[in-house]
Amino acid sequence: MIQSVKSIPAFDNKQQYATIEADISAAVLEVLASGRYIGGPAVNAFERAFAAYHNLTECIACNSGTDALYLALRAFDIGAGDEVITTPFTFIATSEVVSAVGAKPVFVDVDANTYNLNIQQVAAAITPKTKAIIPVHLFGQPVDMTALMKLAKQHNIKIIEDCAQSTGATWGGEKVGSIGDIGCFSFYPTKNLGGCGDGGAIATNNPEIAARMRVIKNHGQSDQYHYSEIGVNSRLDCIQAVILQIKLRYLDNWNTKRRAIASRYHQFLSKISGIITPQELTGGEGVWNQYTIRILDGKREEVRQKLQEQGVNTMIYYPMPLHLQPIYQDLGYKLGQLPIAEELSKEVTSLPMFPELSEEQQDQVIYAVKEVIN
Image (cartoon, rainbow, N blue to C red; front, side, top):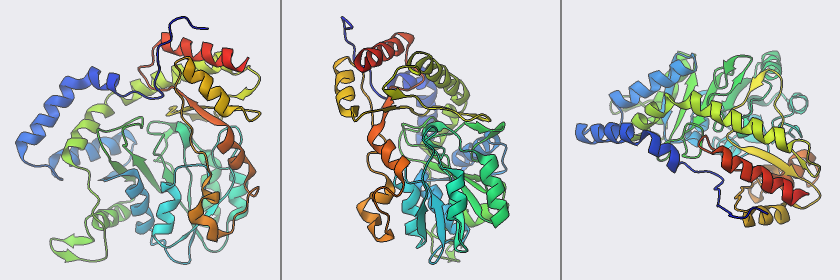
């Protein structure tokens, strides 16, 4: 047993803020002094920087990652009578937006090792009503975009990448969000590129689609006080824009540190019986928004409690898959229909993961997991 237990949070953004506090404070004060708090140069500058980071031409900043997905679906005129294939093992926002535009979410099972979409099952779920697929690069691990893009082109289906947890991850050397038709991002504070509040963005190389999303996100306004369609109010404020632009400069370095932590976890935990560590697909490079293990034999709650007693705080994402949620009972999914997602929901636990996690803290996590499991 560790003699002096120090509590390790599952996530901590205070240390990160402390390293760039001076830059953020100066930028925020400049915005406050400017009197321009919505739109304008600050937001435009971030949009250009974020698009360039992904080697894309267009970026539309918005209120949240949820809004980013909603705007993408609206831009492709996806609605009533349409189907959108996605994963049941993710946050509700991914399917919520499909329902919000009047379309039907179609859930397919996930891979037991990567927790991402099972591409073979995606292929089997395609019907004449399928208009889009939303792959989620879950926990920062990229989906096999080579196989998915090939499938989409065969059936003329749009790919809307949910990159909420994966900013900076790559597949085949290309950043996720730049491979499909549209990439959607969240800047919620716990993300790899997180703001100091809500925020999101959509990125694409399609200028017509980008223009459409800019209209929809601004009340459907095509010109001042001229409205071409029903829109929404979804804006990234200037304070978040300048904070995110500063953080974007550090993102690759922070992601490198996350990879190093994940590598140490994997080195010391991968051979322990009773747990399964996450796997990366060849061709992808993840950014480890979470390091999520599977705790077998129904022992998750027992293990989590014992880890907490040793100062290691953990998180569970997601304890009930979407196809079994009360809101989707009318879709007709039954228990046992998507067994991998259902199994994962009972087994997964995310260990502490943030760039500033020290080697001493990592060792405490590793030691505690080994001791508790053994």
